[in-house]
Length: 213
Image (cartoon, rainbow, N blue to C red):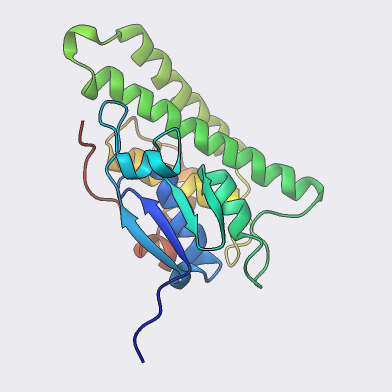
């Protein structure tokens, strides 16, 4: 019998913290085998026609489903995937646990966005156009958030990390991958990340490659 085609396709990027969050989530809830992962290079200066056909913003991740419209934005894709498995939900349904998880996801997204903006001001933008004040401001956001996480991070249940933990781990790994200002002087945060990084879902989705402009 010929192999069956997975019912979903994920337009992915091997060096995107947002795309990786979706794939780690899929591994954590047992859905990775149902998703065909297809790498696509995208950047603000280089349009990817295939991605634009599925997402008018031209960004990954995008989840293509056989029987419904495409989904995009990592938060939306993870929320949908959380309705498609029979394991404990990774987005708590109600109570303070829900708001803590969603708040942590938002913090992780903000960290990634600040890191991306900092790279523009230090690596990617032509040197003559870089803005030192902006770079300092984005660095300040990273450092302040690391300090906040050191004081407030709830490590949760190690067996069933929630969406906030998944988002944070994939963002911290990306920040280290891009050699951005380090969080490692914060002992609790570093220890938590070290343990999470050993999970099978993280080992199966390692970051590699670089942006092609």
